[in-house]
Length: 235
Image 1 (spheres, rainbow, N blue to C red):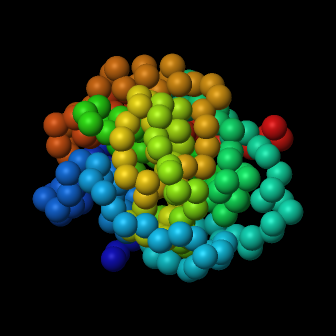
Image 2 (image 1 turned 90 degrees about the vertical axis):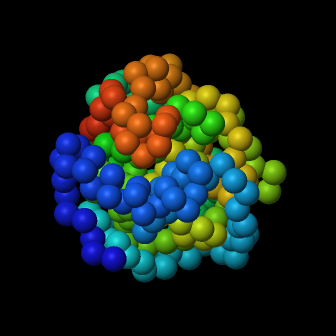
Image 3 (image 1 turned 135 degrees about the vertical axis):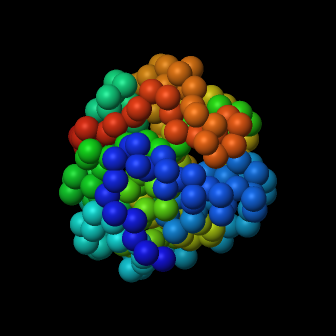
């Protein structure tokens, strides 16, 4: 797959239409992430993580290197605060339940990977999420590596959940989603955070609606959500 160039939100909308034309026919309300990743509201198989390993993968957008897992650092609790154009969103990382995932998110945040990116997808029907983490803004970008699923046994997705988007079992990259209203998904998307502040910001974004460019209730948020920076702090 050719890595899309960095593009503005207006151009990103055009690219996403082309991308979604390929994906939407195969799935119902898919949430696309790296390399054609989809989160669908239909059951999906998932393979438990067999260990924390970061495997080189394409695409490699805004490449910051590949993290080397450090169990001691991974165990340290932290809070992530995203400063966005619509307000701050903070979450507590579930380092004890999803150490590989939270270590990757910390790595990317500390290397400014998410800075000056935007959340490219909002769903307002059936699946209630805001999806972010793609520096290309197309829904098909990724960090240059993938890693296994975690914390899936009995996973649920109530409002305030932060979880990974994926392209199938054990294909996590940089894209993630915030759940702004209780939603039902199959336990196939690693939950790795719990919102501690800014759920009202997400609900404001959702109330602003989206442009239906992918499907009814599924498109680019009408209130642009530009991530200015992500701060990691000790909990």
